[in-house]
Image (cartoon, rainbow, N blue to C red; front, top):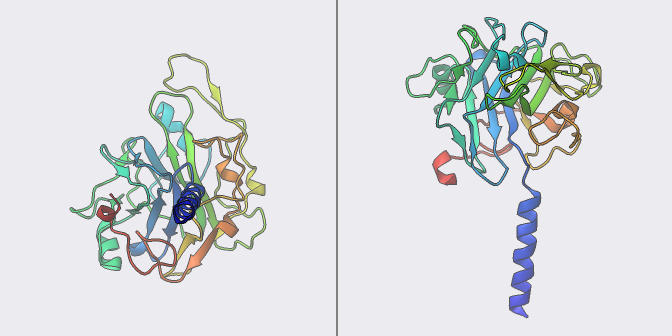
Length: 283
């Protein structure tokens, strides 16, 4: 009988662990102010180590000229305060790891007293740099706009017309939980691109959620951050028929309910935790 009970417990535990996994990486936390404290945190709850060499980060005003989908034909137009960048060769994120990308590596260390995993502006000799997709795609003053914009993690292996959204969040200073009011957001509905797939035929993106229907996350005041209250699901997100790497419509999530203000930022650790998760302990 005791063996049967143990088997039941183990089975239940396995089911719980499986149910706690998500099928793609998540943007789990970000800080936009003060400037020295800015970072983006990514969480891997997929159950496996993920190679990041074909993963990109983007924040920008979404227009026809400054558009991350232009990475496929190298026509992205850079701006001084925005960025389109790629993880370097050899980059990976282990299952259960919280990976931190700082805007300014040296300032991040001064603020939090430890190094980020990667940085954009190349100010720290001890932190690996994110890569520009072309000269200038990481602006000289690249950072996250205080008033609001979007943060996107996407995937492109360099051989297809289309990129795959991995995770996305739109945040606004005046967010109230209602749709609309997005100053900068993503909607690829009706967009086509002809990239390096070997033919001269443009491929079309599926419909995204209209910008006016997207529900932005609330922003934070100086010294705080915005974090996912749960990294085990995206319950409000449409799970099929989208442009996501696993078919999700990443623009459909209710960011207002998914993200909350964290009074004390916790880069590199779980929401609400007081102990940083050290990368080596996860292997």
